[in-house]
Image (cartoon, rainbow, N blue to C red; front, side):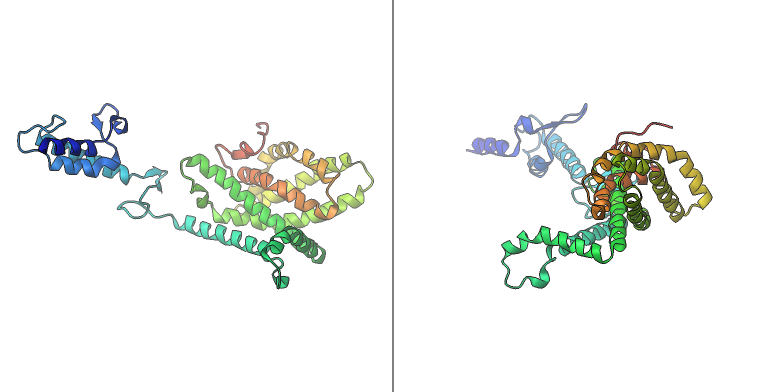
Length: 340
């Protein structure tokens, strides 16, 4: 009976061979989730000098059990460290030596959650003042058409402010997209890396996006009135020469000065990159212009362009902030521009 109980204990405590792990050049060892049971078995092994079912003496069993338990503890509390930051770990913030998420990541997370919640709430409650007596089905059915009507009403009331706000949001999102690509390249195994974005850079993009929206509003009005009867190809040519150059210059000099550079230094930096920005734009905007000037009404052209411009603003952000590595100069977001 004692031998039968011993054999059953061995079967229950020792994992099958397929579950055992091999360390490089090291002995056979059980996986982490068997560590506690293995340790108890080893420490409560047979009497002095007696062989256990694995052929080890009691002292050897105790030594092996302690070694396995130590390895399991290290694996259980292991964290990945890149660039001096604790990026991940199963017991994040609870074990000694494991850092909590940075204050920057927490603030960015709260900011992203707050902005998303505010936009979602505005969308979901667009008809809240006339909901009385509506069913949930009627509320959901009217969300899209009534949200679009609310946008058009705001556009009719103050088109400049609305377009400035939309473009500011576009550049905020585009800059965060650019930084997410950059951080993902530095920390490929950390899904939370995007939360470490530089907020001052985000707000610089947002601040320069608002006046660019005003510029675009008046430009599209001028383009339509000055070249109203001309073939649309002429409007695209104007887009991709004078307007694109002025637009890129305003963005680059504006973000440079806001980042603390003198106007002279910002302009010298822009001179070195102006041609690359122009050629990068030519790979995107002519195709967009075909739709802009043949399908989209004048009042909605900036909204359409801003939807595409999220990607282009990410490219501008990467180039203007001198980012190196994957994703810089729009490598991962647009076909790479010719090298200087």
